[in-house]
Amino acid sequence: MKLPGPQQGRNGKWMCAVALLSLTSCIDNPTAPGRLRPLAPSPSVSVAGPLGTFTIPVASSNAPPTNGALAEQGTGIFLPDNSTVAITVSGAVHVQRIPGYLGDPNMDEESPLAGRDIFPAGVSGQLHVSLNVGSGTAGSDTTTEVWLVRVNTGFELRVSRTGAAGGMHCMDPPAGPPTCQCPSGPCSSFSVPSYVFTSDQVITVNRLDDDVTLSAAASTGAAGRSVTFTPTSAIPGSPMNWTWTPDSGSAQTVACSYGANPCVTNVYESGWMDVAYFFPPYNGTQLPTRHAKVHVTTVNCPTGDSTVDDPTNRSLLANLWQLSGADSTSLPIDGRREHGGYSFGTQNDPFQVSTFRISPADPRDTPCSNFNQPGAYGTLVPLLSAHVHPFSIGDSLPTTCIANYTPGDVIIYSYGYGGFSGADWNRMFDDQLPSMVMDRDSIYIASPPDSIRWIPNPNVPADSLPIPVGSWQPRVHALPRHYGNCTIL
Image (cartoon, rainbow, N blue to C red; front, side, top):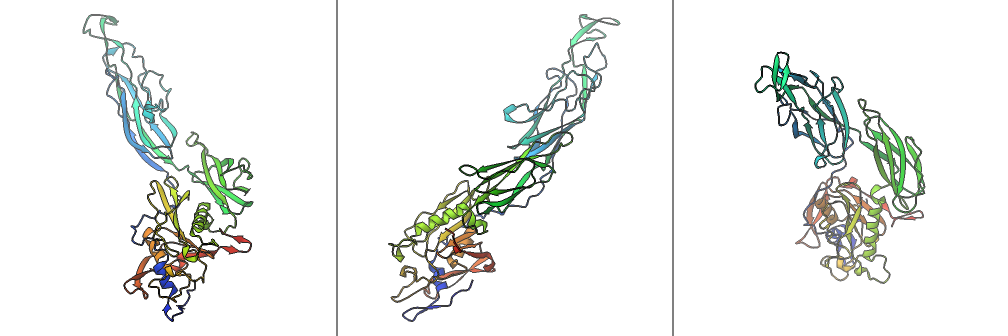
């Protein structure tokens, strides 16, 4: 933006509008501590990969009292939040007779039992893999079992196994009173561990990248525009049902028909488009259907700038402008006040503006300065600061905006540093947040500068002024509030 030259006061003093505005406009508590800037959303990358393996312990025999059972224990494999995992159990538990024991062991000599039963046991709300070792028919169990699990809240995978009771068996030679008959004669019967277990049984867990994203071309714009919704996923699949839900009121927007890819429809109100996405089987097991949704917004006088067109940001600016008194016909110009606030996201969706907060008025606020503070925001994530300059370019500022005022001094409101004063840039640097400023003519949007440099204040020798340093010009742009028949806010 072109910066104006110095403006001459009536008493002949030369003063720089830019310099004085840097001092007086939007003080915003320049000594406030810095806050972390939310990181930009990371590009979508594959999250597929191994989560871990665990060898399932096996007792040496089915000796009482456990009969060879494995008590529930952790595997050290943690299933992450919001993930789909494939749990594979492979290998076999071999059951053999102990030499010297006679009679029917009620079990085949070798039975592959890996993955006999894999199911949620429901203990403490956790998921468990339970592997049964018990009576059965040889070959009736598979040696590899795959189970797909959708995990909403992460937890550690746990494992357990049932045992196999030995029962009453005959022993030759007898070691006690004869109670049963052996081929050689009377024998003794005992409840004994008649089986030996050996194992090579392993659980392997892999995370699948079945996340689905839904994008919307022209996500913000005028009502009635055509919007294209496109689902994508690392695993090939196909969309099924499309569902449109308006933010409020009844829906005029019509969702696409079953299987449309992409979905192209006219959007008449703000709302959410949801798609149910179908995947083919994974290793013979059906993957769960996933959903993805995206929000689209309708606004009056759309600018194509996602920050300015965001309804929450617009509401914030509209409220700040009303509070400033800039449109009041009865309020004197020195009765106007700068006001500021912040837009916030949530921890669950930290990059989607969800609410705003107006900073409390401060007794030190003036028509050219305010002490903008986000306050204690708890679980909210500050995304953007905003404030208003209640003037139009070329307005003469009230005397309360002039440092060391001498009767006859005049200072003209100008663009400053791209619509922001030096103090605005300094606060932006402290916050490490993007910022918006609105005056009567334009809305200005900027991201923080590389650094701040302090220069002497020609009007207040004991003071200094902050100015942005580095390539700040490409980081700021402006949009007119009035164009054609449209007025933004």
